Image (cartoon, rainbow, N blue to C red; front, side, top):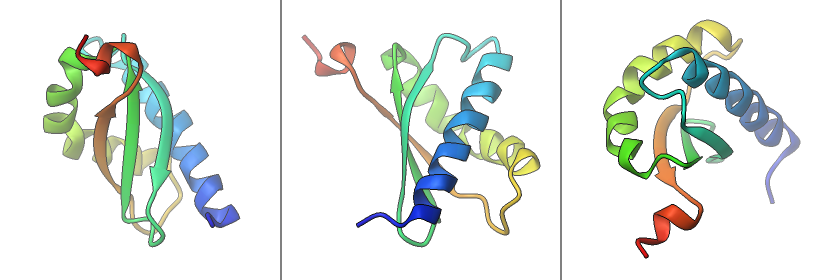
Length: 93
């Protein structure tokens, strides 16, 4: 069972990260589908659509994106980001 706080923080991370990715021309075409946080809010699994070729680049840029995300979130600790592909393009058809 996911707590309300976890859901609220995940929603905030999703909105803020989507805005950050739109500002970055390198990742502008990546769409954040959903964000899942673990119970201690330490790690965020970010599901991305339309960005299978960008997943590796996003994971390399994750520390930089986490730093930028920390500037917009009012959290004591910003979760580590792990980008995961989703959607039909991630099936490898």
